[in-house]
Image (tube, rainbow, N blue to C red; front, side, top):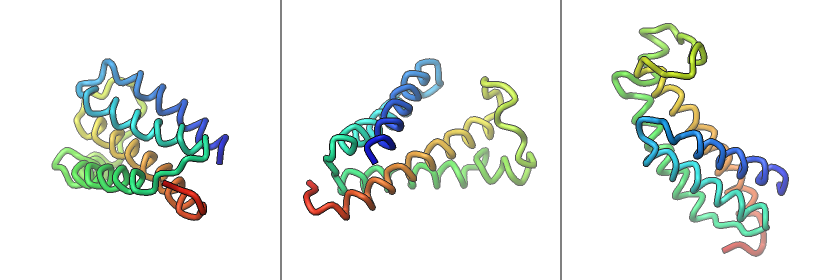
Length: 126
């Protein structure tokens, strides 16, 4: 688990740094840094199950908004036939940007869920 959390801690810091030119960095930088901090603590054997649950719930709520938004993931799948999201790094179409954000949230939720399950099994967690 230590290597897992170190890798994701570094990745999420890099993801946060790459948000500087995003249209909404004030949303995405804190999202990535929150999860990065929790991965850092988990790598040091400090688990905070309540903090994981808060992140999971907030990210799941935001993911649901992106999923059902009129220019969101469902629109990308149904109307645009799952058009490639990686043709160019510049997301000129709203369904591309929102689909990328959705899958970013899914990754964050998975990492937090793994830490929550593992941390909840530990006998000494805060």
